[in-house]
Length: 223
Image 1 (spheres, rainbow, N blue to C red):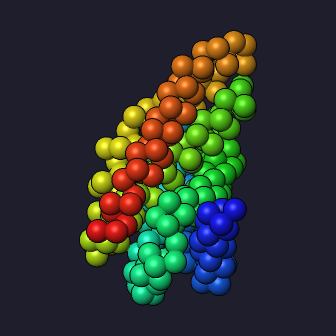
Image 2 (image 1 turned 90 degrees about the horizontal axis):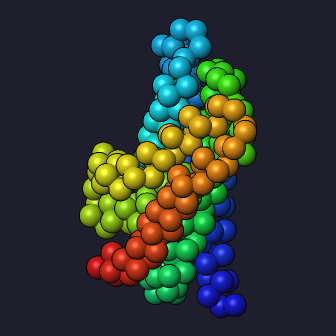
């Protein structure tokens, strides 16, 4: 119970700070909105399904790089990282930051996906597969960027370093994500059987990313 209470205190503190400043929410919302409008202007008429799927995940990934990188940078800027180290275990800090990033990433994915459905309409025959791919992608991206944002914050190297480090790790997650997004645009008949392999791959890789991040976080955080 004490471990859970410490984890929830990190989540509550991040949520309270974000609701007060709205730095990540406003930045992410503006980035997603601007990206969707530019995509709509550039794509004349109905795009092909593969193009629409790729554009959706491009918006999601770069939005994550813009907003999720502040998970630990803000602690360094406020000088509160030492307090976290003194009062909480590294596992509590990581779990709390991860939970907040998952919630924030889920909101970003929902906004981007909803905007795409309105501005760049493509057929959607299997909404369940589409939603599952988006959810797994949000969790995997949040798990990756949580550890990397801690690394960037400790290195005092905010800026382009996070997307540079994150992209190679996210490629194995994005490949099945785009494939599932394309698949969801087709017929609903037998779609879950066809999607099973990619869904398993996404879930497994997201779990691997989070597990590896959890194990490495103590070294990064205490260094």
